[in-house]
Image 1 (cartoon, rainbow, N blue to C red):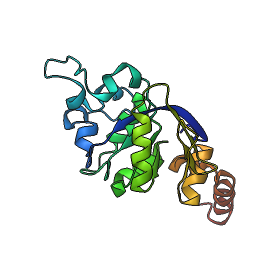
Image 2 (tube, rainbow, N blue to C red; image 1 turned 180 degrees about the vertical axis):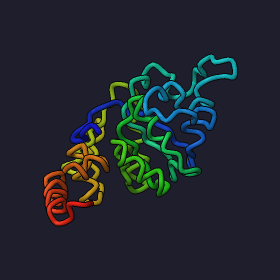
Image 3 (cartoon, helix red, strand yellow; image 1 turned 180 degrees about the horizontal axis):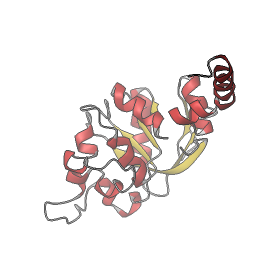
Image 4 (cartoon, one colour; image 1 turned 60 degrees about the horizontal axis):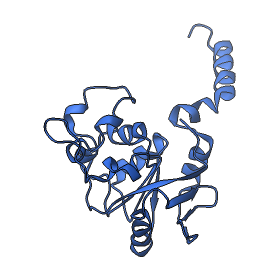
Length: 201
């Protein structure tokens, strides 16, 4: 998993509430277990017509937001079914941070496991950042995980809370496997000791 320290990038405004995981990545794209290749189908039913043409007014199809790395979203982002393909699709598109007033629990947890930082801020702060994001590609936000801040393009700083363990994992690029490998020396020592105590095992 890639480390998340400081991100400065374009933020796409998505003011819809209750953006669910089927909107993020529709069910017909869940046949793969690969974490790559899903970005082209992110928000598929909102981005494309039935014949595959781009819908021009969808935010991620607009020239200013095609390289967005941050989404500023409405309340209850990631609700619905517990598909891990949703963060996979966001990450494959290039999204590393989603800012909202709230997230569905399973989606929130899946974000941390896949290197996406979900930032919860009060409604007034999200509204201000949404307005900032609407300014387009020249309005770049900075998300500083170490400082736990989001800085708008005009320099306004918003602080956010995060669980210390999750913060440690994100900054060091540790998913569940990475956390286990941090204990490799202890695991190897235990296995060696067990081999001596129980050679038949």
